Amino acid sequence: MHEYEALYQRYRRYRLKKAIRRWGAIAAVAIVGLGTAVYFYLSALPKDLDAPTTKYSVTKSKIVAPKSANEPKQEEETNKSIRKKSTHAEVHKMQTYVKYDPKKNRIVPDFGFEKRLVPPPPKPLRLDDKELMRQETPESAEAKAKQQQNKTSQQKAVAQNQSASQAATQERPKRKLLIKAQQSDDLKALEVKFYADPTLGKALVIANMYYAKGDYENAGKWALRANSIDKKNEESWLLFAKSLAKRGERQKAVSILEIYAKQSGSKAAKELARKIRSGVFR
Amino acid sequence: MKRVVIGLSFVLFWASSAWGVSVAELIDAYKRGDYRYVCIKGTKLFGKFRSNEDLVTMYAFSCLNIDYIDRLSVPILALGKTPESRRNRAYLSLILAQKYILLHSLLDGAKYEGLNLPTTDYILSRVFNLYFQNRYKKEGDTYVMEDEQGTYRLYVKEREGKKWVFIEATDKNGKTTLHKYR
Image 1 (cartoon, chains in turn yellow, cyan):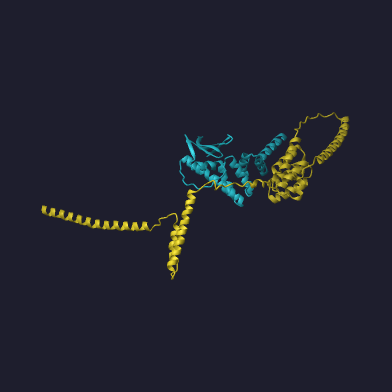
Image 2 (cartoon, rainbow over the protein chains, first blue to last red):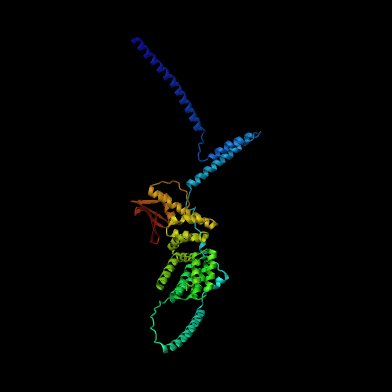
């Protein structure tokens, strides 16, 4: 029994030694093979990694070059040219890395644009718009003011006559004290700003101020100016129509609003037209 | 009611005038030397003058004058139709690149060797060259440099949780200007 066990152990040891020897030999062969493969692979790699194209061109020229009687001469010539190229590349490399001076590669900005800085032209206006946008001269303004004064004096005279006749019959009614803010200077300043730089916002603000003041003629004029800057602006259309209606030209105001409502589908314009037509807006 | 209308109209007018900065005003400001105004308002109006390279260049140089270098990236993209604008584009993009390389090096300790960038007359470019050519003396955390145009002190400071790079430039007449970048 014991002899059998000893024999079995000896047999196992023998198998192990045999396997070690076999696998050891296999591993040694594999290591040697891999080592040689790695060695050949590394030696086949281009030494100058910076210039792989030259390597490529060498192999390419070798493959492509036609075989002829002058083959050795051609090979020599190609080799010479390759050497020349490589030396030129090396020199170039030396120049860029060693003799580099940033001061020589200076970028100087071009300030020529400063001479060409001209404000962009304003939005082109139509012929009638140009007429509309023309700034009122002081003479024409004075003439208008005189006309208005004459009108008011005539109205006052008529009113005085009427009041005198009424006074004879009735007692004089109590007068209300009306305080008006002085806006003329502000409006003039706004107008000056508008003529300097015409914008829709400014024209609308001026139109609104005239409308609030009760000067419906000027309100309409400024609404028209705003409209000439932006034809699609709803507020300018509405303000112009309101000014017309306030001046008594109700039919004209309604037709303008209807045209605009038809074009744009504006609900506000339709509503205002309805109000003016029905007499709600006076 | 009248007063309300008048008040509202005034408010409207001031609001419209505040938003309605025209390109003509920018040109006037540039000619006056108000570069901050041109750069800040020009950002809002950029869409209006994007197609005009002269105005884009004016905006870019205004921002450069007040050290708003980050804003140069937009005009750089808009320039490039003429040789002059391409030169200015190269000039501006070089400064932009130099700023970020310098900031990376100063803030993160990144090392760059053999930098072959061109240079410009802008202060950041001068400091950039001196720094990467190792032509400086270190005094604590400050790099002190000198060239033919003056002396420069380069240092990093933290303000409100953000790191800023400061350049104190002193010219030959003794005039000191402070430039900061982040």
